[in-house]
Image (cartoon, rainbow over all chains, first blue to last red):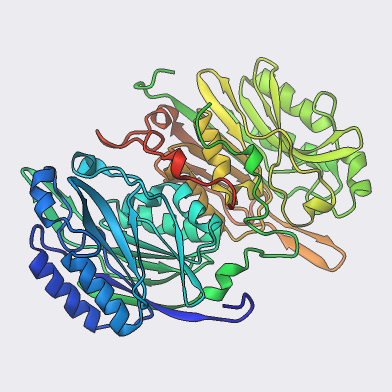
Length: 275
Length: 275
């Protein structure tokens, strides 16, 4: 992709309410949603095949899968190959006896990358290992993609790290229980402060464990690199949220002859840890 | 301040339109505005005594001042002592032949600290040296204050560095030309991602150099540590924008039994510079 030429891409977020502990049902729903879009880039929510709210690793482990053989990952990789699209989906990853809250990023040529969630939310730490992959950027067809999952939104370092690695588009599978009024504007800020596209596929519905109910906030959102929300889903609908995004604008971090938001940084003045 | 007890403070932002190159007039306006508030913490805009839009250092230098002897800094320090308040104001600082875009933070006991703007905006780099103080936190009466200036807003590292240093309240003298629809939500994000109070005193009005006119966006804003805008000024009025803020809530970075937004950080996974 040349930095000066426009390069429009269509992005689709597949918003739905996964059924807890029913991968077969969820894969059927996902397959149906995938048929409803021909977008260049498709994003599914976090843990989209298993559901979210687990507190016992022994309950989740039998449903967790490996990227090369699992049913969700196989569907994702096959769809990316057959449709020639980039596809990102959250899933429970099994690695020996450990479980990670992961996302697969699959390309049409069969390559795929796994991101393991860096910041675990609430009772996830009872079930998942903290992610050990860190953030990374992967190119397809001249566009550079990065992945973060759900609660990573709250840490500006997630998107900043991706931007410093050259990311154009952040794909963000989520099961957000935070109010949309909190996370949506923050994702707009992530776009503004890095001049990146941010695509959050958030689930809807509720899940219960014992007496506790989690309610997911939907409103899946695609933000352009100026921070404008180009498309926003409903709070509770099963839907395909789509927008056309000009990726080439992400490459120009300057907004006048003097200022460039990455070159203007003063790394020597920043702390990464409390003294 | 105990972490569990509430500790309300009143914050006042003095929003007005400084007259370019007329410190005498501006000091009179400032003195008048100061009489209109008895707040615990008072914030004035960036470069509030000289005006903003200079492109020739030789024009600004005669108006630039030293913190110990200059007219704006003397007024600020005297007012802080006499009224027993914390006062922060932006000014052109002269240090030998160099000029910095600085802010003074003055306490009732006569102590004061100088912050020199880290990120210079637009033609400021024709006039000012890049700030060399870095970010720092200063305590008065159990509350920890940090300072950043205007365009520092766009870099999450500014507030993050202050938060890692223990900051409760970020004082933010500004001459923002960015639309309020861009910077106001971003400052709310800064509060959310760090659980800090953020107080932006932005100027109003316009300034012209040759054919170029800069328009300042007003809408001075006080945000609590949950990201709620407690008070917002008008786009073009001269006014005192005030709110009561519970500072004690800034100290608790946890929002459930599992998550604490500073402890949850994964510094080893973050980049500070492009590889």
